[in-house]
Amino acid sequence: MGIVEIITRSIPFRKYETDISLIRAKLAGEEIAPADYPELHEDDPLWSIMGRCWVRDPAERPTSKEVFAELRSLQSSLKQAQA
Image 1: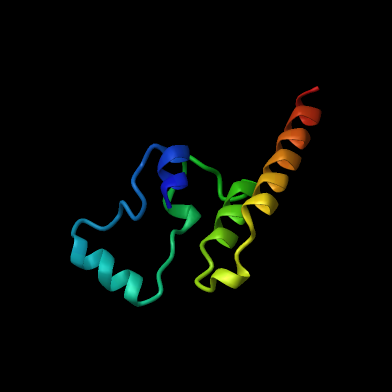
Image 2: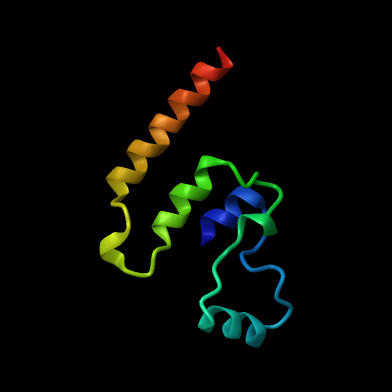
């Protein structure tokens, strides 16, 4: 979840004022919601990549190699759009 903090410059789950309220939310299955971080638009493809990395079952998460390939592809797309 550190990537959210790096990208948005805000701590993950910042809407919770106490540790216990955060723990309760996580136990209830709450995940980071893009709507809570307007610094990174909800449609940004990074949310999709991050969401797949946070899947509870490690076997369903992408490998670092797959994430790197997606980020490279995204970078190329952005460069082409700026040209």
